[in-house]
Every structure is written in C-alpha cells, then in structure tokens.
Length: 103
Image 1 (tube, one colour):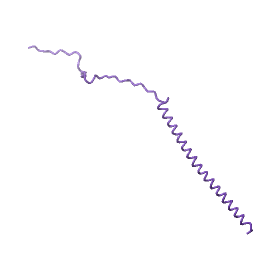
Image 2 (cartoon, helix red, strand yellow; image 1 turned 45 degrees about the horizontal axis):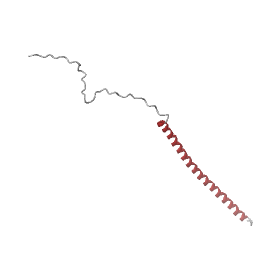
Image 3 (cartoon, helix red, strand yellow; image 1 turned 60 degrees about the vertical axis):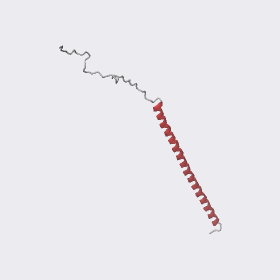
Image 4 (cartoon, one colour; image 1 turned 45 degrees about the vertical axis):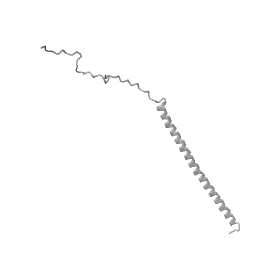
C-alpha cells in the first residue's frame, strides 16, 4: 500500500459518511414536511367541508331556499258548544199533535 493511500481512504470514507448523513437529513426533512402538509390539508379540508355544510343549512333554513309556507284554511267549528244538547237528526222541527182522549 502506498504511503498516502491510507489518508486518501480516510478522506473518501469521511466524504461518503458526510454525503450519507446529508441524505438522511434530507429524507427526514421531507417526511416532516409531508406530515405537516397532510395535517394542514386535512384541517383546511375539514374547515371547507364544514363551511359548505353550514352554508347549505343556512340557505335552506333562513335564506332564499326556504319553501314558501302554504296557507292552511282555519277550521270552522261545526259542532255546537259542549254544554248545549246535540240536536236529534231524526226529529222534526214541528211536533205532530198527539190525540188526546177526553173523559
């Protein structure tokens, strides 16, 4: 082995270790960024979904999407008051005279 070869091998090994460590740091940074981006996107997507649902609910309960109420006829009272006797439907208005015998 040449006298300067050992120093060169050490230098190459150090450079290889430095490049390897740089790659590891780069990959860890990408993983952290992906995780953070996914979290931000999930929160933003959830907020957007809640806003859309809330808008729809407001539109159909208080906005122009509310259906027009249909007028309902008020029921008229057709039965007499409860304290009055009900008329007999078979009875006539004029009573027929009943024959009476005189003693």
